[in-house]
Length: 183
Image 1 (cartoon, rainbow, N blue to C red):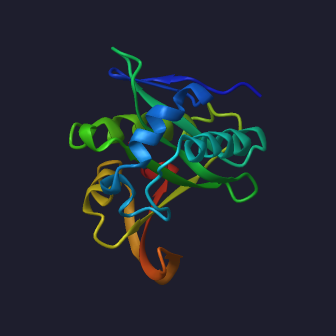
Image 2: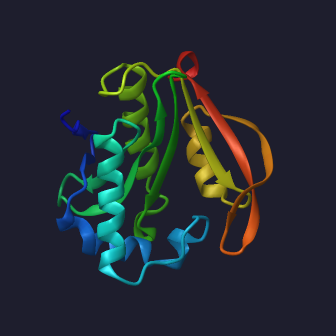
């Protein structure tokens, strides 16, 4: 199965490789980036290499796909995005994303995710038809909620104590996007 490369006006979405480990470490070692994540800030390149391996294994197993988000002009890795889970039988997937904090507020996440979602709903990805995409945010992650709402996701409710990390329970706000609702 060939990993699909996608392009937008400003971005190129590619497969992550071990060459990305230092750039990924720079992103995931930023406490602002991982504030709403179920991980602690990274402090070794080995953690980045394991994450790259995890993302690529999920693709090879046909259960998820995560792209490197790169600036077209410089090929710089500025984040990742994609489907953390993909259920072929149920025709649904869970979406995830993060950007280096120095690139926040410039529309890159929305641009990358729009392309990813369009490709998924147009059956251009190797995992089959997709009808529903779900995104979950921790309460207080207003920037992430804003991205999902711009893309047409609808807030579906709060799942109380649905996540547990960093030694505490977290309420998660659920957002859903159906294929017919995507523009």
